[in-house]
Length: 264
Image (cartoon, rainbow, N blue to C red):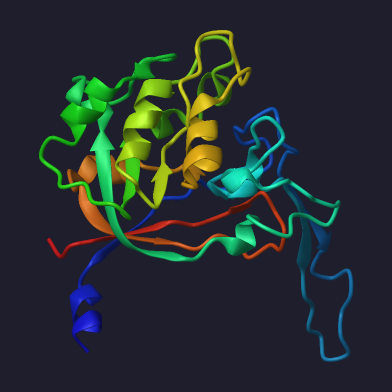
């Protein structure tokens, strides 16, 4: 098959961050916890065999994850003017189970590079001008996935700096959010825990880009991506495979995005 031949020698990059207790995350969500529920030797079968297993507790917006459209409301309404109408069992509409798996074209807008750095400064607000420069050589088409490279995933192991409570986090401001939405992508994503410009000391007080994407435009967001290895390749157009966990009624779910790069 031509499709199999096309990917046979392709390079695949995992764009997810490893999930472990204590990893950087938004203070708005329950933390990730994993513990072995049964260790080898706790129960031994008659033939000498033994199995271990774990219990995992996590919020849907912890680690690399996809935001469902039900994640954010504005003035009490979800995307399309829908009433949230949720129960404790989740959302009947616009939950992550409504997300159609994405296998398609993806463009990486390396804003860090056009600003002459590997990592944007804390609290840097990405503007439409930044996005124009980063996309100058790319052909943006409706339905694409658009990722913003800030280099912030290079700071993943600096927990407090990555979260940015004091110094802030680089990301798109409201004007940049509107610039992205006008290109009508299917998905947007980035390296930070909130796909937003977070000013020093402001935290998650307001999240206008979430409103623009999820409520006004119906565009899903991927957050906390590990883009550093991809940024280092210099490849800016590739195939993205994105399929979050199918959790019925959830406002988001962990995902392991795969970038399929052309054969070098």
